[in-house]
Each structure stands twice: as structure tokens, then as C-alpha cells.
Length: 178
Image (cartoon, rainbow, N blue to C red; front, side):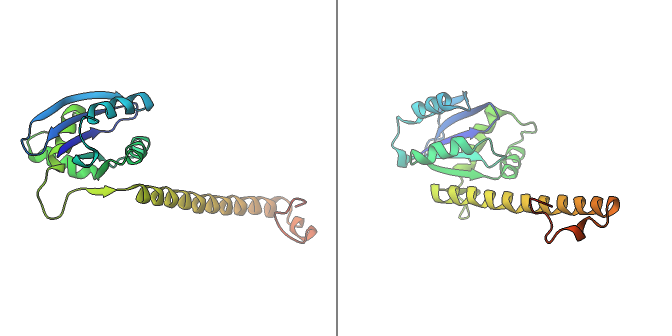
């Protein structure tokens, strides 16, 4: 099994590859761009191994990993998402204090190689990712509806202060004529 550790960044990511059985570092940490060209570079590095013998790990931080995650899932790779607190704790336990993008890739590989019964990461799939996106859109929709309600209430307050008789002139509030 080949373990691929990816440290996520806004404009560029870092990747390293480690052999799980021997612990040998097959690919020293190297940077690649957060775009299609960079993703193809990543694939060129891991295409040497069968898809089912590769486990890719990355931190589940912000939204910068979404494009890469979707790309890897479409290529049928096994992708594990890791809580950033887990990588931070693992780095501190190994004596590292400061965050270093290159070394974090190896830290992620170390977490992936865990033999614990309860794994310190969660495997994801296209279905889970699609569900996550739907959940985000639902939350955004709910948030926008709440904002509309707050702004409507502010508008009503201003109308009540400036022209209290205004509401009596219309059958319904907030229509086109209103």
C-alpha cells in the first residue's frame, strides 16, 4: 500500500508518498499548483501504482481541498480526510512544534499508517461529497432566508418611523406595488 500525504494550501499543495510496509519515502515532499495542471502532475506521480493500492490523505480544512478532492474521487482513488487537530497533535507528539507544509505531508502519511482499530481519519466517496455540497447549499439557502427576514424587519421599522400610515395603503406587504 502506498500512502500519499497532501498538505493543502490556497494556491499550492505539497505531496509526499510513503510505502506503508517499509516506511520508505518514495517521493520527497514536492509542491504542485491548485489547478488542473497541478492535479495532472499529482496523478503522474501516483499513476505508477494501482488505484486500489493507494490511500490518499489530506486535512479537511476550509474549502481549498474541494477541487482536488472531487478530482481524485472522479479518478476512483481512496481519499481519507483528517481533522487538522489530529495532524497537529501527531506533529506535537513527534516533537515538532512549528507547522511545516513539507513535513506535514509526511505527518499525514504517518496518520494514514495508523494500525489503531478506530482510524484517525474518515474515508470519503463521491456520494458523501455530493451530500456535503447539498448540505452546504441548504445551509446557505436557510441563511439567506434569515437575512431577508432581518432586512425586511429593518425596512418595516424605518417605514413605521417615517410614514406610519404607509401599511394601511396596501393589501399585502412587500409586493411589487408596495
